[in-house]
Image (cartoon, rainbow over all chains, first blue to last red; front, top):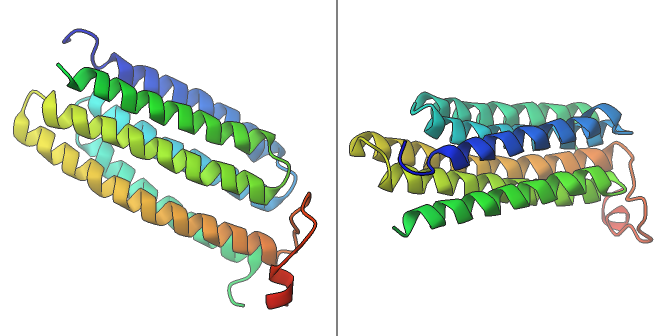
Length: 90
Length: 116
């Protein structure tokens, strides 16, 4: 590999994975259900960032395509959780 | 070259803001402050990691055409991330208010006057 690349992206993936493990605490121990949805939203955003970096590490475009689809599907999941918690209509 | 420090700076900014967002998610007292800390900071961090990937794909990829394709896909992903995270966090805040949870340490509730 050319000097110190792409090792920064591997460090990036490692740190983001540790952050996901920390956010799992709020997902498990959050006192109310909106707290758990907030933690799930944070984990989804971090997973999209991890997939961006994995696309560079493994030299594959397919990781970024999967990241786009994952972002859209996690948004749909968040909207359905919001409907479940707060009611669909005003 | 100038590109490697730029990529490193983008990655460091992304990691620091993601860590701040998760720190706020763990430490803040109620759901609205947790949402406020987490959504903006984590989205900003993921956007900067995507910017680092775009810089690497444009300037340091082996095959130039494949690098431009990867950069375009990451750009589309960043735009989708910006739109969906803002809308989703708004929906979560509204659902939390509708479910009867009040902002805990605050003293006023201005939305209760407008919306019963």
